[in-house]
Length: 155
Image 1 (tube, rainbow, N blue to C red):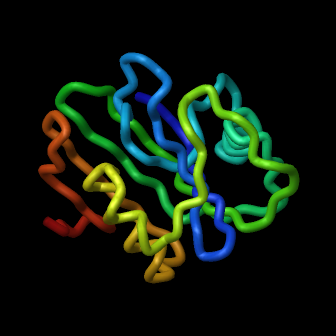
Image 2: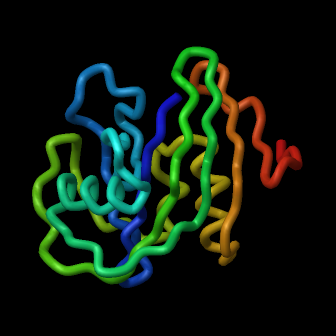
């Protein structure tokens, strides 16, 4: 089982997003996602969040909010539990990322980008101001086949 963090940093009604175009054999290749990554041994979710954001963006988060836990089930990938965060307070300047191109994307344009179908669900929950959620997303290949919010089927 895999444990990860993902963070959407906010500024001027935009999210800092990563267009994943640099790594070969990347399951997120050509998708737009937030910044984050895998837990290292003995890391807490907060420690992983802060390290990954610093490594991928050069930014130091000053505050953050845990928005939800998303469980990804797949017929081809390892089960993943992702801690989803947002932050609107940070210091530093956005740097270069080895995993792709970083760009501030207006929240109104996010759905127009190539993103995972399940990501559209948690973006909606965040935009609606849902304080915290548990979301289970099941994929068959790249196709979303089931989505459950708090145990209730959404699809």
